[in-house]
Amino acid sequence: MTDQTSELLYMRAKLRLPGGVNSPVRAYQAVGRTPRFIQSAKGSHITDVDGNEMIDYVCSWGPGILGHADSRVIEKVKAACEEGLTFGAPTEREVEMAELLAQLVPSMEVSRLVSSGTEATMSAIRVARGYTKRDKIIKFRGCYHGHSDGLLVKAGSAALTTSVPDSAGVPADFTRHTLVAEYNSPDSVKALFEAYPDEIAAIIVEPVAANMGVVPPADGFLEFLREITKHYGALFIFDEVITGFRLALGGAQEYFHITPDLSTFGKIIGGGMPVGAYGGREDIMRMVSPDGPVYQAGTLSGNPIATAAGLATLRILEADTDIYMRLQENTAMLADAVRHAAGNRVHVNQIGSLMSIFFTGEDVTDYDSATTADTKAYADYFGFMLDHGIYVAPSQFESMFVSDAHTDADIQKTIHVMQEYFAE
Image (cartoon, rainbow, N blue to C red; front, side, top):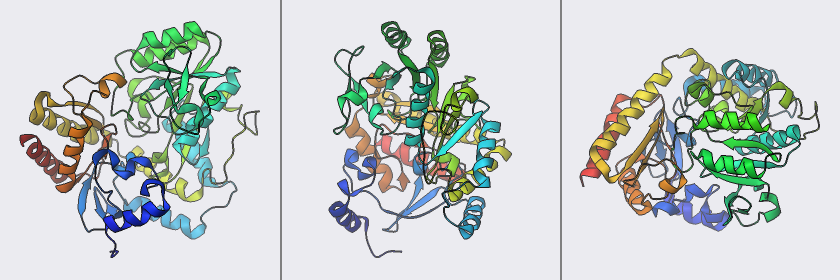
C-alpha cells in the first residue's frame, strides 16, 4: 500500500496533468468530490490508495465483464509478457482474434485491429466514406463515438444545415460534413436524407446509447435505420464499444437481430487492455490499405499482450453460455430495487448488464429527456454510495456495469445501501 492518499495524489496530479486526470470524467467535477486513486482490484471489488475497498460498478467503463484480475486472463497475459511486449510485426494472436471475431459476430467478415474505440470509430467512418465516395455522415445527439475531430459536434441552430464543434480546437470545417439527428426519432433521420439524398456515406449509432446514460432503442428504430441506409445507398455502422460482447456474445447485433455493414469494438476485446477493432462486409473492408486506397495504420495495433487478454476473455464468454442470463438477472434485480425504493423520484433504464438511474420523473428515451435529470441530486446519491462502499460512475450520464464477479452478497449489499439512501 502506498503512503500517499487520494487527496495528496490529486494535488500532485493537478500540477502536471490537465485537471489532475488523463480522462475528464475521472476528475469527479460533476459530483463535487476528490477522485479516488485506485491501488488494486480483484473480482467485483476495487481498492483505493486510502485503503477503502468498494464494490465496483464502473468495471473500467464496461470491459470488466468477468470482474477484475480474472486468474484465467492474468495467466495468459503473464505468459505473453514473457515472450515480449510488442514487436510492430504480425503475430499469430492477431489472426486468431480476427477469426474469433468473425465466428462470434458474423457481420465481421474482415476486420482491422487498432488500439482504442476512438480509433476504431474514426477508421470505420473513413472507410465508409472511401467506399461510398460520399462525405457526410449522420450521428445522434447524445451518442459518443470517441474524441476524433469530426465526431465532436453538436447541432447548430439550423440543425439540418449546421453542425458546430463541441470542443475548442476543432475547426468548423472538420464538422461541416457531420449531420446530427435525434436518437429514437426516425423523422429527424428522414429529414437529413431528404436534404442530402446523395451525399450521406453512413449512419453511425450506439445501438444502445450509453453516453447520455443508458437509453435503449425504441421498438423498430434500429430496423428503420437499417432500411433507410439501404434505400439511400449509405452504410450502417454499429458502434459496439459499449454493447459488444456485453449485451450478448454477438453484441447488440445479435441481441436485436440487426446486421450492420460495419461495426466497431473497444477494450472488451482486449480484456480491458488498450485495443479496438473495426470491420464488416468484406467488399467494404477490402478498401483498407494495403488492399485498397483507405489508409490507416498503427504500430501497437493488435499488440500481443492485449490480444492475449482479449482472446482469453472472449473464449471464457464463449464457453459459459449462462453468463448473460446471470448478468441480466442481477442487473434487473438492482433496477427493480431502485424503482421500488425511489418511486417516481427517478427513472431507471436497464438492458442486459447496463443500467442508469436518472434523477427525473420523466421517461428517458432521448437526449432531451436525459438532460431533465437533476445532476445535483445524482451527485448527492453518488457521494452516499461512495461513502458506503459502492463505487458507481461519477456522472449522471454514464452507465452502471454489472460483472459476472458480482456475488449475491454484493448485489444484496448494494440494494441495501440504495434503499437506505432513498429512505433518507
